[in-house]
Length: 367
Image (cartoon, rainbow, N blue to C red; front, side, top):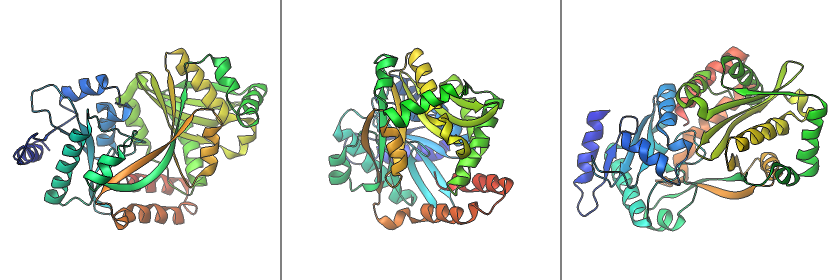
């Protein structure tokens, strides 16, 4: 990757007019680690550890575009990963399997410069498209100045944890959340958390049930193993059990004072016991005690009103989340959806071993 990155950097720097655009490898350049830690809009999805887990699991190559020259302190950057797939094409995504990945720039002019440089790279390298996933959407720059177009929209929910626990609890929906947590207490559900192999096994068994329910294969277990290996104590698996049987689980990621809910799963036969609200509540209590000030419930598809309503019931703030692509033609998004729809058609018919194998084959193509 090094020689190709150097060629891109020289080509980008040779463009007419300042500022020049450079590229760097965020896995080997310590400037990115320091910059990502200091920047107020950086998230867990900018971190080298997340990018390394993507590389190990799916072979994605990360790259940062910046106007900061080699050897100088970083003042901006957009991190992307190259997805090179014979099924869905070669494309640059910022970044795969993240809910959001804000471009870390100080003004709209710099954002426009970096996005324009990416467009030039697309034409030269013959990528299929570029996708950026900002948390804070700079619509005017993306749509009017750079020809990037909206490619997908979601909602995202975030809960402010700075209030007392009692105040937080009173802000939850009385029947949908409060009473279910109280029911879970009466049922004497047991909560445990960590990142041990045993907890991962419990989580993954529930994930398999949930993905089958949704007619999709599960993400490969190596992905979660690599996340644990790379992120360490920034990752937590919470599991709720009834008489030793796991019934609900979530996986969360921590960066500074924000905790992100990334994956959740459950056994539908025990939903009446309140396991999912309970696992969230226990996780919220623990991360608040550790100093977290915000709980990010993650993105929700607009065509999933049940999930949106569940997150609404926690009393946080709901905002729109918009992804952008260049080129923005609707047809460019087709092959990923075709792959997912094909998986849905066969998932309900496959035994567990084949469903897991399908996940190992599918996910590297749809990041």
